[in-house]
Length: 171
Ligand SMILES: NC(=O)c1ccc[n+]([C@@H]2O[C@H](COP(=O)([O-])OP(=O)(O)OC[C@H]3O[C@@H](n4cnc5c(N)ncnc54)[C@H](OP(=O)(O)O)[C@@H]3O)[C@@H](O)[C@H]2O)c1
Image 1 (cartoon, rainbow, N blue to C red):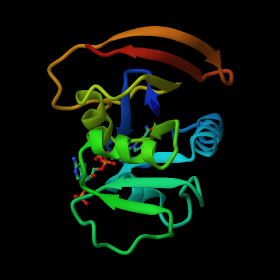
Image 2 (image 1 turned 60 degrees about the horizontal axis):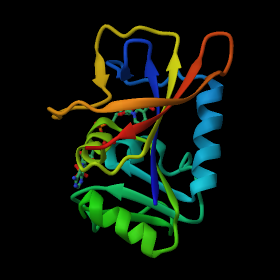
Image 3 (image 1 turned 30 degrees about the horizontal axis):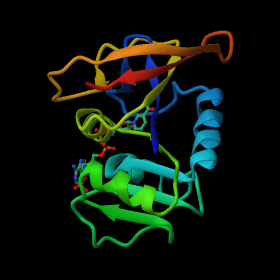
Image 4 (image 1 turned 45 degrees about the horizontal axis):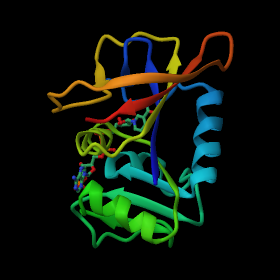
């Protein structure tokens, strides 16, 4: 099972600004988000990110949309949404048992941090947008460890946006 993080970041590494308005995201980030979600058919996100996307912008109608939340009895926006408070290990186990070979984690900070901390992320794709945020949300929170990355690929997506694709060396 391969687990991949896909995120847009400012040039100084933040995943959201304080206004919390996604007007800094390129069309190319959005296209990549759809492509990787469609390819994996297994998309993991936190409830805050889900609340931004649901009901109209959830990336897949079939497959598995896993949403971390402590409110597991809430009414899902569509039938493939699974609200869960299971551990990252269990979530990955369950997706593998369903036959998935890849899963993509699309945010936000809490969810990405939980999977990185559990040592369950194989690759990270960062779409670096041409903006600096004075304040905003970091990519990771509450993690002491350092992680070494190996660059798989760099792509210039448009005149201003670069995509960095790394593998993560988990200890
Ligand atoms: N730049 C990007 O590519 C990108 C992508 C996605 C999101 N974002 C941004 O990221 C922000 C959201 O990030 P975030 O860190 O605040 O939220 P998040 O990870 O999307 O969701 C956090 C919520 O998920 C639930 N949760 C987290 N860990 C859990 C666990 N171990 N067990 C059960 N439930 C758990 C909790 O929901 P309950 O309160 O329901 O229990 C928690 O409040 C937004 O501003 C969004 O715009 C950016």
